[in-house]
Each structure stands twice: as C-alpha cells, then as structure tokens.
Image (cartoon, rainbow, N blue to C red; front, top):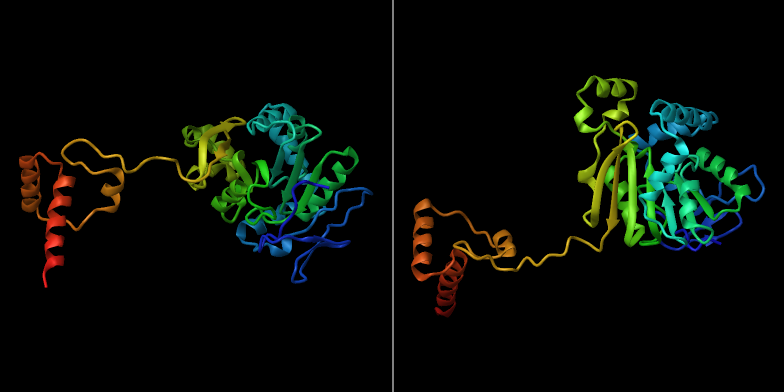
Length: 333
C-alpha cells in the first residue's frame, strides 16, 4: 500500500478504495483503468474531473490513442539523437536536481510512459515511493503495465495536473519534464506541484523553449520552425509566491528551459518596519501603505523646509503634524 493516499481532486476529501475504483462520500466513483497485465498497479482515472481546455485537448489529441505510445517513443529517440545526448545520463542529471534522499516520496506529473521513474528510483531506493500522473489514460495504462513486473513502489493515475488528487505537502519533491507548455494554466500547474510538496521540498519543471540569446539566430529560427513549442519562453514569472532558491537554466542544445525551486512557507521573511535614516524617514511598510494624496510642489517644499528646521525626517514631521491636527479635531465639540 502506498504511504501517500489519493484525495478527490475536486473537493480534496478522502476517497474509499473499492473493487472498481475510488469512491467519494457522495457516491461519485473514479474508476480504475483497465490493464492487460496481471499484478499491474490499479491506476485511478480522474479525467472525469478534467476541464479540458485548448491545451488539454491538444495534449490528448497527440497522446491518447492506440498509436500514441509508438509516436511518443519515436519522438524521444529523435530528440536525444538530435541533441547528441545519452538519454539515461540526461534523465539521471535531471533527477539529481530534486536533491532526493533515500525513502523520499516523489510525484512526477505529465509522466508519459514513465521514462524518468528509473532515475528517480535510483535516488530514493527501495524505501522510496514514486507517484506518476498523466492526462492521457492510454499512456498511464501502458506505463502501469510496463512497471508491473518490476516490483518497484510506483503508483499511477490519470488526471489533470492542474487539480492533483493529493493532499497538501504529501510529497518530498515533484518533477515534470515535457508537456507543461500545453497546460491550460501553466502557473496553476506549477502552483499545484508546489502545493503537494512539503515545505523545504523541491520542484523541478522543464519544457521546450529556446534560450533568449539564441531565439533570433538562424539556429533558434531553425528549431522553432521544426517545432513551434520551442518558441515558448520559460514561465519564470508564473512561479508561486512561496518559491525560494529559484534556478533557471537551459538544457539539450539550450532548447529546453528548466526551473527548479524549493517550496517555502510563504513570502520571503523580512522586517518591513525597520526605520530608514535620512530626510525621508519612515519604513518600507509606511512608504507603501501610508501614501496620501499628492500635494502641490509649493506645499511639498514647505513640508521639507519645516521638517529640516526641526531636525526631523519628513515621515516623522508628517506623523506629528497630522497627529496634532487630527487630535485637535477629535477634541472639538
């Protein structure tokens, strides 16, 4: 039994395991995908909860068919041959970015046929646990069948990476490589990966996108002409607010971006109330939250002159002057 349990991707409530699938308290059933291999992991199908936008439909049209597996494998063979990379070594280098320890629990979204699982299992060892998710039931069924004979702790599910069927902080790390460009909401996909990873855990995601310094070269135009997805930019501005220790690099001929970060508790920790020294005074907090309506240049000049004459910062002079005025009005009958 996996240590990480599924929850409903719509309500995030617990699910009950039945013979046919995972049952919600109101009777909704997420059925297990059929498999043609005895002993294969029973993979729940959460695609009923998918709101298939343009990106999801494009992904499904490419990979949810009888020939999808062959097409996908042919593409990968072409890709690594083109960029003169050993596939196993490359995947190992990507998994190393997760900074995993033995026994770690890892989620792979957009897992495809599960090609990254072996490299991740090498790091987490026999006590680790890997969950692999993909939008395509056909790909998930094939991957689950392939891994059935290995005995490894790998668990598969079909569903939307924008609404993952796991509780907050369920994993030590989350990984995605290839496919996030077609997410209907890339920011939500990254946020979901961060949500299901514990504080201090790692998220690594990457996809096609020529490095900016190559985009307008003949090399860049050539690869973009081959595949329009290589025109995509790294979505660094779409990271969740609690992303820390962020690193952006490019791999495979500088044609794939890779973003990696550590999941933090929230926004960066600072003290916005530390007072500034100097004529303006105030603090980061007051300069942002305490702004008033604009005054005339003449009034501003008089305030600066009055503050300097009393040896006060503008902030302190205004606080005192407005305090006196407001206090006087409060005392009037």
